Image (cartoon, rainbow, N blue to C red):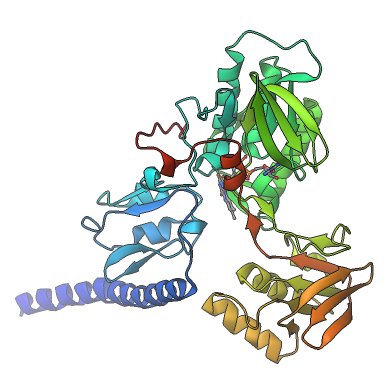
Length: 441
Ligand SMILES: Cc1cc2nc3c(=O)[nH]c(=O)nc-3n(C[C@H](O)[C@H](O)[C@H](O)COP(=O)(O)OP(=O)(O)OC[C@H]3O[C@@H](n4cnc5c(N)ncnc54)[C@H](O)[C@@H]3O)c2cc1C
């Protein structure tokens, strides 16, 4: 009797522990399988930065890596093995690697000899062109901390050369980009008494400017040169951007904004940095441009108006306005949905194709529901002819139409920086047999 009772209690305990676990496991497998299928169907491209490299022979499919990822959507478990669903969303926290109980996962760049988007760098982050350095995400590894450490290190390397330019028109170093890598490099240049200039195509802040409102960025302790340490495990986007402003003012960081660097040429040991409006000279150049590139433009008259934007940070700031979203991918659709949810907005989407392009299943369902409820109007097979203060002219199959407009959001992709870097003569992973990778701090 007593033995039976023990057996019954043991069996009940096993069921109580394992059944919920098994059900959760099955549910996850099912949803991950669907996510994977959806990603494959949409042709999600290969990751551009680091991503989880999975050793399937070791993986036991417990899924702790999936739970540990703060960005979501990167990993899933399919047929009992971890798999990449959308490696492009990996920002390199590396928590998946830390929690894997069998060491089946490593965050890295893969075989960089096969990659033509990873520049070849020596241990000081110097490219094959002497005096031309790369810092931050452009080197292949994300994270604010990595970018800041690399920004500081390349400048410390440059500062080892004790020569200082006395010529006002020839800087010791020009820094391209003012995200975490560029800011850290600029402050290090001040600390090391180098003459410098920082150039950015937008306001300072880099990718942080593009984070969703109130996003919490996770980071490990990192030193901001001259300022001190960031020791908290996470900071809000707003805090980081205020910090950027504060530091730039406090140390009088010299930044030229709204200038896109198109080319960097070297002649007689001097670099010429060419923007759309100017040319600057320096003995060294640090490219801290990130990997997101430059938003692609429509090329229509009126695109310069301040109401035309290439990112949507905060849909809630737009109410009772006429909005045109240009594009047909996930970013365009997500922006249109966010804007259409706000009070009183009239949202139209203009796209040159006859249907949305490879969008996520979830987005497809949500946008179709909004279209059915007349919250979003689609203008397929159309293109923007002209943008005016209060309206937009669209070329459609039925001729040119005018629609009232207060804001235009353009999501037609970006121009990655790699081609222009290759034109500068920088060697990339795919071009060499022996590679020295100095990207990690
Ligand atoms: C959604 C999202 C969430 C993230 N979350 C985290 C997180 O929680 N924790 C974390 O540590 N990291 C996170 N990251 C990654 C982190 O933001 C980046 O790794 C970091 O910003 C890289 O810094 P960077 O200075 O190398 O490049 P960027 O921040 O991309 O800055 C590059 C700068 O260069 C400028 N630039 C580019 N091309 C030119 C040009 N031709 N001429 C002039 N200027 C140019 C750009 O305008 C930009 O200001 C996240 C990224 C994303 C997208």
